Length: 205
Image (cartoon, rainbow, N blue to C red):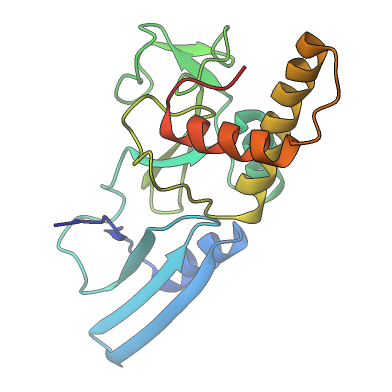
């Protein structure tokens, strides 16, 4: 049985303030429903995300600002920093972890700058909403083997698809340089590359 994580509840003190903050980041407003003064549900969805975020009145017993370590995955951590900065989210500088595996809690073991090898999963930044709920952005460019169903290839946004096409184009250019000939079947090569990359299996050469 599939069990898909589709909603994360975030505790906030001021619902309207949180709503404006997340909308200001470009997150889609899916719902704002109140059945009375003591119950209100607001749902927003980050761009390209299959999971949504809910906050409101009487939707959680958690203290406002107590949600920490909420992760968003991006394919370009530098571009993500620039966008969050422009939108007023006050992100941290890009960092990587001293241990090289995921990251420590809080700000422990943070090393300034992206992962030196720019390895997938290795570069991060963080920001908080007005209540102090903590978000972490993680750069993922290539999935580890087994992380995705090899028989299913999906892209959650046009930008994700475009980024995958650019990586396939760059790899195909190297392929043509090795063979010394133009490849008339490049659409098939691109498709094979993109499926393999997302599944985390050996890429075509």
